[in-house]
Amino acid sequence: MERRAGKRIACIVQYDGTLFNGWQIQNSGRTVQGDIEDALKVLSGKSVRITASGRTDAGVHARGQVFHFDLPVDIPLKRICGGLNGIMDRDASVINAYQVPDDFHARYSAVEREYRYYIHNHPCSSPFALNRAMWVKEKLDLQYLENLADFCRGENDFASFCKKRESEDINTVRTIKDISFTENNSLIEIKIVGNAFLHNMIRIMVGTFVELHNNNDDPSRVKEILDKRDRIYGGKTAPPSGLYLHRIAYDPELETFDGAF
Amino acid sequence: MERRAGKRIACIVQYDGTLFNGWQIQNSGRTVQGDIEDALKVLSGKSVRITASGRTDAGVHARGQVFHFDLPVDIPLKRICGGLNGIMDRDASVINAYQVPDDFHARYSAVEREYRYYIHNHPCSSPFALNRAMWVKEKLDLQYLENLADFCRGENDFASFCKKRESEDINTVRTIKDISFTENNSLIEIKIVGNAFLHNMIRIMVGTFVELHNNNDDPSRVKEILDKRDRIYGGKTAPPSGLYLHRIAYDPELETFDGAF
Figure 1 (cartoon, one colour):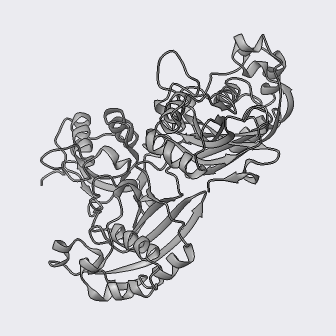
Figure 2: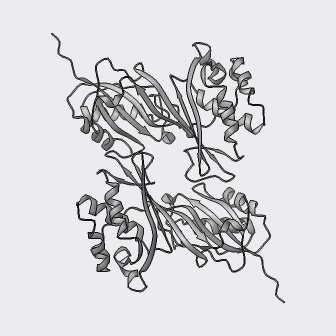
Figure 3: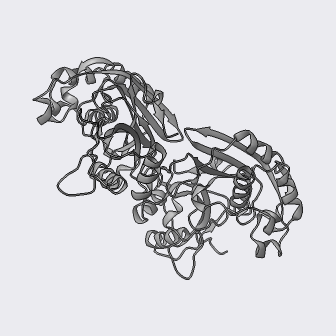
């Protein structure tokens, strides 16, 4: 009988996406996946391939990205966090590690995804929003944004809010469980919860919202755009710097397994 | 009768202190005052000296620093904000400008100062706390910190929490009107309000709090340290990256004057 090489580990990682060319390893450029795999090789002495809950694009941040891998050697969970963080640059940090069942999969086991999008809404720029939020000078009316969101909640075909090339090959129906808006000192936080999202879906949605707002369009216009099922009717893609992968939910939750902290 | 050369303007400026060698112009190194005066010269065509509510040290941030100056030429208030921000690097931003009476003084007219100090309290570092908060690995007990704060509120001689050389030349009695603690997702926010503060006073206070906590000392120990009136009994100076000059209060408030926004 073949002995298992190791055990499956899932980690939560935070990163400031500013200096990364996104999550996924590319032919060139620094990536989060690349940095973590390089650090895992130093830590474990072996090449380890990691799998994330989903990719994030260049400039997009994460507070709760999840990835899993099979560890070929025995390393205590706390040492995985401390070891990786000691090797990696400080714009990415593994904040917890869990011992998960062999059939846990960071992507396929995910039941819900939560993102946040931040808008610095002030006539003047903010040093603290630089690379961390979208800047919108015109005063945004939160009630108007709520009205737009009402048309997007629930199950919809979001082809108009998806990178064109990709929308042709896949089913573009997704379910948005919640969109809510809060404002605090010129910073608008948009919370978006769904089962899964299309490529650029949140950024195109936010860009469309801001465009409709500034054009003073009737909120029902967003419904017309969705019904077109074509990217060309959506607004500009909002900048990546405002987007944060906030949390991935699993059933059972990741926190139910043995964790480093 | 001599005609006045111009009019007095007060501005609110935000800055990320990471790449500045503090507020005050130095013989070498980039400073906030230096950047603003350089930009004012470009904007107005004349050398203009500005006066702040107080200096901030290298690495310390500001959300509501106030400075005043006498403008030798007539420039609309919105153009002052837009013009300065268009010239300066984006880690400093003038967020409002007010036309104030000739006797308004950013420092001497201030009646209250509010700072915030942030602690990232988690076993692992955070990319979002990098250069923006102090990192404390040991779980901090907020009730214990509250107990320490109880001994610091009100009028006290804070010589133990002041840079030694400076405490010898000045009256070191200050009044802390409020200290309060809130926690949100591993980020502890300490709000500190007072009439005025000694050099490094908040950073030494926070550093002392963390040290007493980690030593499991009796909270009354902070009273003993204050009574010594000597810096050598205080704890380490907490890092500048956690400190934010949050707001300067005036009577009447700055917002009662004509503003750009």
